[in-house]
Each structure stands twice: as C-alpha cells, then as structure tokens.
Length: 314
Image 1 (cartoon, rainbow, N blue to C red):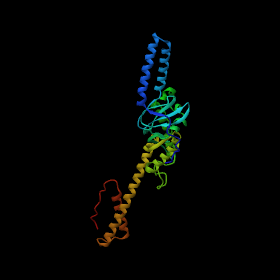
Image 2 (cartoon, rainbow, N blue to C red):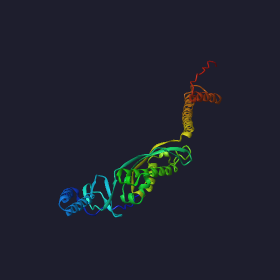
Image 3 (cartoon, one colour):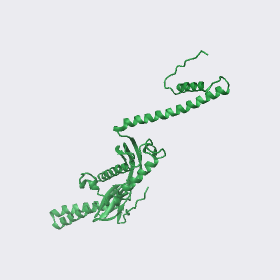
Image 4 (cartoon, helix red, strand yellow):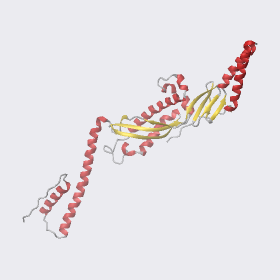
C-alpha cells in the first residue's frame, strides 16, 4: 500500500488545563452580574463595567475545548492553519481560534453490490467491505470540499462532527465504487474464458484484495484517508446472465465428471483384459476382446443401471 505525504502538524499554541481556567470564568461571571445589578440603582459606570466583564467572560467561555480519545481539533486563527490538537482532556485555548472537530476512529463501509463488466465483458454483481479512518486532518479539511460532499446539507450543520464525518463517508462511498469498477475490469469472473493460470475474481482472493486496497489508497489519499482493510464480500453473475452461466458451469462439471469416469473405465477395462490373459482364464481373440471392451465400457460409463445378458451357449 502506498505511503501518503502527511501535511498535518501538531498544534503548539497556548493551551491551559480547562479546570484551572473554569473557576476564573465563574468568578468573572459572578462579579459582572454583581456590578451590573449594583449599578442599576447607584452608578451607570458600574453597570457598564459589569457588562464589559460579562462580554469578556463570554469570550473566555469560547476558549474551552474537550477532546476525547481518537478525536482531533483542527485549529485555525483567522483562516490560517495553526495545527491539529489531539491532546485528550479538557483544555482552554485562545478563544479567537476557530476549531473543527474530527473523529479519528476507524469506520466501516459495507457497500451494496454494483453491476460491473469483468475483463471479458460479462456483467457481474460485486460488493466490498472497507475499513477506513482519517489520517491527515489537514487534507481532510482543506483539500476537499466537505460541504459539496454532504449533498445538500446546510453549511451550519457541518460544524457538527457527525455531519462532517457523514460527508467523508459519502466521499469514501463514491471513490470506493469507482475503485471497485476499475479493479473488476482487470480480471475475469472465473477461469472458464481465460487461461487456467490467470488470476480471476473468484479465485484471486488476496491478490485481488491487495489490488483493491492499492486503488482505494490512491483515490482516498487526497482526503487524508487511510485504508485499513478492503475486501470483496459479494461476487455473482448479474441476474440477466446468471441462469445461462449456471447451465454452462453445470455442463463443465458434467464434462469433467465424464472425463474422470472414462479415465477410470479405461483403466479398469485394461486391467480386466490383462488379468484374463495373464491368468489364462479364457483365450480371447481380437474380435472378442473388442466386444468385451465395448460391453465393459457401456457398463462402467452408463448413467442407468445396466442389466447384463448371460450367454449360456458355446
């Protein structure tokens, strides 16, 4: 699997334990409310001071961030990328920094089977299961348009981490379908129409899955997404040719079975003729040998029960 260039950097700006700043917030809130109430009856200056402290307290509140395990915050200061903050816990940062919350947890995609044409042009139904996660938060936020991927979701809704991740899921689904079509077109469904030593979708397994992972990684790296695992989990002929292909497979199975039966019958007839001759049980000329071989082949190769006719004459 190819290695992706990582444009993500760690956030190195100011960060303070949130539980240290939290008491300051409540103290300023209490003071601002007290001054505002006292200033109503005594002095406008106290009311103004209380109002200013209240606004400052609201600004202070905007700096609190909470980060859970396998989550990250993309930090931006007036449009400039300042790094990605991944330190787990409750923190206080510069309140003028805009943050976007992302989940770094592994996610699963079980794509519905799609109809594609294999290498020889046969329509087949093929599906995949994909495990993926965000690896580069810079690419995820700044190098693809998550709002367009959201298919009609409002821009305000994308501030929610679940909405943002649903946009990435939609992107992954579209790219997965494209990669699946590309890989399926490189292989035949089975070895009936290609060389026996050629890799096929039905028998390739690991090699086909590795090729699928490579194609997916190439397509998803632009979004900073890492492919953990990708496997084909559904493979069948398309309904319009499934019945015909089933009859062909049945015919191939019958032919192979017949080949085994004839091979075994010839071996048994040869053994019978050789034993009769070597043990001098009966002397057979060429005409009688031919008749006996014919009868034995009919008995051994027939699908129906054979009823022998016993010759009691000379």
